[in-house]
Image (cartoon, rainbow, N blue to C red; front, top):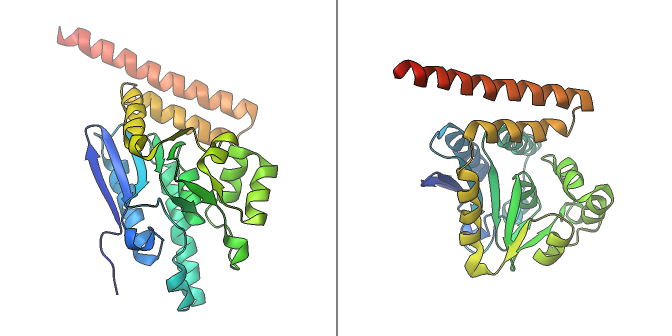
Length: 252
């Protein structure tokens, strides 16, 4: 049966919210979920009023990864291929979002849900959060660049340990290893996230966009390449400022 509104988008002031909306399944992902996620990422990308975007889950979990109840009913090879394609398209869209993306995490962020969280620019977690990769224990594999993202954030050795053992870690351990930036009590999670969005929201949207791009491209660029990228970005914002100054003077 086709589900509707598995992922939602709304904006509060200049902050966009992408909300996973299958709380009855701890926001576990399935086909309709992935279709809606892709759609809402595009909506968020095109929302010029949103300076920052928050990714979160409805109810008591962020995202519990693959919906194993549905998987147990059987999937064809074609269905697995389609799912992998959609998961990877989600990561591509996330990289192209063109504005800071903050993960607001409560409860389980495991499997694909952990990868969604790691695709955010940084993460705010409450004390109920749990992170991990159970894939090797259930005959699956990390699919959406999680091997690269985890290694970049916590280091190669710790990333392999998490993936090989399938161990879930709590918010305090995630903070200790650099997987999350803040850990707060559940009642303070949204306020802390919005406080950070407010700080970022006062910055230049163009500068934020280009800075985010430079960090992401720097993961696979050489030293000389990133210098060229940063120079091009500086010329872009400098040129825009000069154009604006010219326009302001002309209007006078």
